[in-house]
Image (cartoon, rainbow, N blue to C red; front, side, top):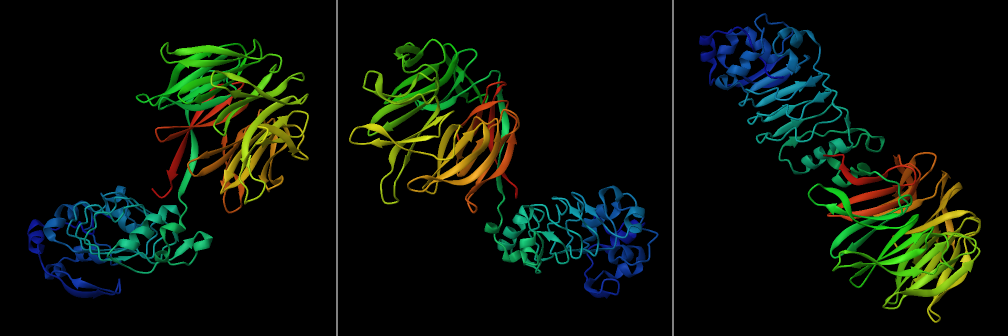
Length: 557
């Protein structure tokens, strides 16, 4: 509603209206008291009709441009629109303005040219939408009424720049008190303007509740998502991240090229780029471990044996320093590194029938075989975690070994012997491919992956793991929990359908479906944090390795 009058007044008449004072007046059409208009307006019925919205159509209101042009000179302070439709495309003709029963939209800058406008009543219409900059330029506006319309929300900052505003009437609208209206709750808390009581019509939990009784805490408007960021043109199995020399790196095992590809963050291009590589044969795991200030990489291969490399800072390359005994490690499938009492270890899960899952210990010069665990199990995964027997006891190191033919076995660290001893297994969970753990408020949980059947979430109860949740899975070889900032996720991959991302619901103490990702034959999901940016690396055995960015979205913005 850009204007209220545009009749064919002569220039002399316009000049006679400038800077007239106003006195009280009540119109039967509005039933409202208004300041009396200048006496000259009594001799201008066309302007009177436009101002007060009488049902008589003024023949002189042919264009809406004139008041916009003369508004500042006339010092008009009151505009009333009732039972009319005002759109940006109707400004050139009064036909659209007066023949419609109601407004349904008000566009940006609808009142440009009326800087002295003080009172604006837009009532009893069918307005569904108001643009953010509708009232821009109304720096003198004192009273604004949008009562009895069909507004469900208001755009953020719609009252910005209305510094003179003292009264706002928003009654009679069907406001939906969701995140889009959070700004209004905050504005009501600090504005000096008087605002009549208004109520929520939705959502159901807030229906009929006063909007000014709400607070910002009543709105949960922050959501997250994983947005595609970058594709790497090669297949991969394992992906790990590590810190070295004050920088963050990513290492990816490529099974078909046999390489360990190292990536670094390009601070200019804002992408990941190649840093270095280690060439091998049928590489399945590239596991970095930094001891003091030295970087080592354990490279597990299906053929040609597995090896340990050292980063030579002077030569600026990786140098092989050790072979891993081939009699024990025949078909490596997973590697975990851990530290107990200032001693560094790594354990290799071997999936061959004749192999042994073996723990290696750092002795200052290299890694030597420390302990071989059970034989003939064909282990596919090993997970290191710390759990306590009771709430009052300290957590102790444990290992969980998964096997394609047996139930997961739990080993506990014996401080006296400095060895892991077989403690128990996880019942009714045969054919678990992998186990990964996470913690929520001090409680320890595990995600168990099954290729056929249901994958599970279980919670440590002090003596055993207890069922919490089942996830239908078909063709799943990875069920990876990840914590990014304060968000706890679990990602269930599949060789036959979309990857399901779950988000932890603190009230339900369970995971809820969050997002789907399209990753071909995923084998691992890894969180990488660089420069306050969070990324999700998704390996793929059949397609490109994918990188997603963890995005935080404020729905109230």
